[in-house]
Amino acid sequence: MRLSLATWNINSVRLRIDLVTRFLTEQAPDVLCLQETKCRDSEFPLAAFHKLGYSHIAINGQKGYHGVAIVSKIPFAESGKRDFCAKGDARHITVTLLPETTPARPINLHNFYVPAGGDEPDPEINPKFAHKLAFLDEMAEWMRTDLIAHRDAIIVGDLNIAPLETDVWSHKALLKVVSHTPIEVEKLGRVINAGPWIDALRHHVPPEEKLYTWWSYRSPDWSKADKGRRLDHIWVSASLKQHLDGLTILRDSRGWDRPSDHVPVTVQLNLD
Image 1 (cartoon, rainbow, N blue to C red):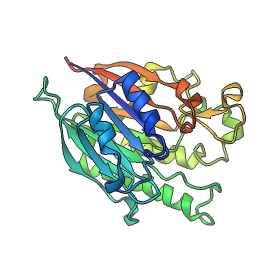
Image 2: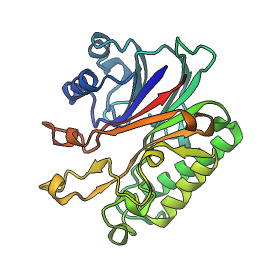
Image 3: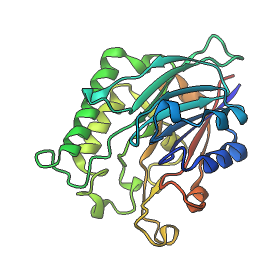
Image 4: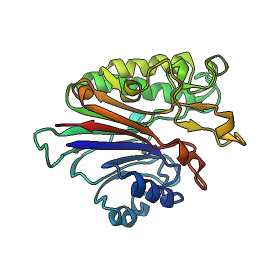
C-alpha cells in the first residue's frame, strides 16, 4: 500500500477553500493536515471535503485564530488533542490512521501548529516568544514521557522554525530573526531527539541543498527574490524510515490567486 500524506498551513480554510479543492483534486493525497484553519469547529467546511471523498475528518478549531484539522480518505480513530501551555489554543490534534489494506499497522498521526513567536527574539520582553519556547519544551518532555516515536508515528505541521542553515535564504541575515535563532533551533533539536524522529524532507533532499516551504507576503516578487524558509515539516518514527518513498513541495501554489504564504508538502510511504 502506498500512503500519501500532505501538510499545509492554509491561513483560513474558509477563505481558501477553492485552493484546497484545487490541491485535493490535482494532487489527491490520502490525508491532508491543515494548520491555521481560523474557524470554529461548527464553521469548518465539511461539505466541500465530503464532496471530494475525504469523509474522515478531525477538527480542533477556534474563532479567528490558530486551528488544526486532519481530512482523510483513510479511516482513522480520533485520539484527541493536547492543550500545550494550558492557553486554550487550538494547536494540536492527533488521530490513529487505520489503513484498510494494512490493518495490523495503525499509524499515529500528530498535526501541530507551533506558535510563531512574534518579532522580537527575547523572551524577557516578548511574551509570544516566551510562549513559543515553552511550547517546544513541553513538546520535548511530552514525547520523552509518552514514547510517541516508539510506535509507528508521524508528526506534521507548521513548526515555525527553519532549523538548518540551508532552510533559510540567508543564515547570517536571519540568525537574529524569529524562526531561525539559535535558541529555537536548539529547542527544536531537543524535540527531534526526543523521538528520535526522522526528518522526511531531508531524507529526500540533502541537507546541503536549499529547501523552502514559505515565502513572505511582504515580498513584492516572492519568486524572483526567493527569500524563503522551511517552516513546514514532516517527521516519521524510525520504524517508518525505510518506507519513505517520495516527496513533493508544491512551490507553484504560492503563485495561485490569493494564496497562503505556505505551500503544501506531501510525502509518500510504501507500506508493503
